[in-house]
Image (cartoon, rainbow, N blue to C red; front, side, top):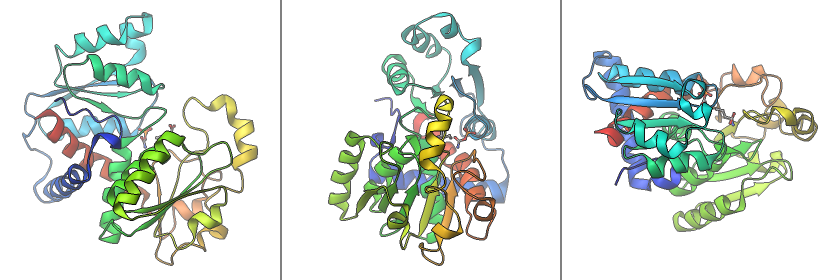
Amino acid sequence: MKGDVLSLRDLDENQIVSLLELSIFLKNQLKEEGANTKYLDGKILGMIFQKPSTRTRVSFETAMLQMGGHAINLSFNDLQLSRGESIEDTAKTLSLYVNALMARVYDHDDIEKLSRYATVPVINGLSDLFHPCQILADLLTIFEYKKRLRGIKLAFIGDGNNICNDLLLGCSKLGIDISVSTPTGFEPLDWITDIARKQSREKRSTILITSDPKEAIIDADVVITDTHISIGKESEIQHRETLFFPKYQVNNDLVRFAKKDYIFMHCLPAKRGKEVLSDIIDGPHSAVWTEAENRLHVQKALLLKQII
Ligand code: CP
Ligand code: NVA
């Protein structure tokens, strides 16, 4: 069993909780003892990027280096993939050299294929459907701020995309109530919502999908948004702006419906003035920098569980 993580479907509640516990241990250890551990001495992570990245690339590379390992950045254009070599052959070849692969792809089918043919573990560093590393960091951030996960109410406002999909899977698995508000036609996919609804029934938590952002945000402990124009959707800017803006913008008019001590999160990069105003992202409720920092700690935990 390779233990690939392509979405939060691949981890059960206990696995997520133990990853979060390990993340907290590693975060404290980094602060108290510094960066030089040898947990991954001699281990190599291959990182394939079809799309740009700041946080994912640097946090994975830093994670490997701080644990005594090494990361190789494999941009799509530098690989023979860009000249038509198949994902199958690439997966088999890279597995001969590295201990694990992390990939950021456009089409989720590509990472499924990579996972099928690689003989080493594969981690999804974002696809059009999922972003599990981000949502693990989000869960850690919520736990740090709110001291619990079960019973928390989370509102996601915006595009029913990769972030929203893994939030639905992760929250419903952990007993977090989740409300999602998107414009009509931009809801999360039915099959993902169905899995989330089934999980939430087991945990006696709630799921609401609505086109009314005020309905979603009422009494929220956590408010999350994401860009309205994900990587690859640039040709839809005009159409999307008409539908999303300003109704689905996180601003002071909207957050007054959340709990007084709500926290605001965003995976970044943010388009300030579009999905969120600077007042909010730089304001007293914002947890975005802890959220970004936590990418490093949860990915270290994930690498330790996946590679060793
Ligand atoms: N949040 C996130 O995945 O950021 P990058 O696109 O910069 O990696
Ligand atoms: N939904 C965004 C997330 C970026 C981290 C995108 O896919 O571009």
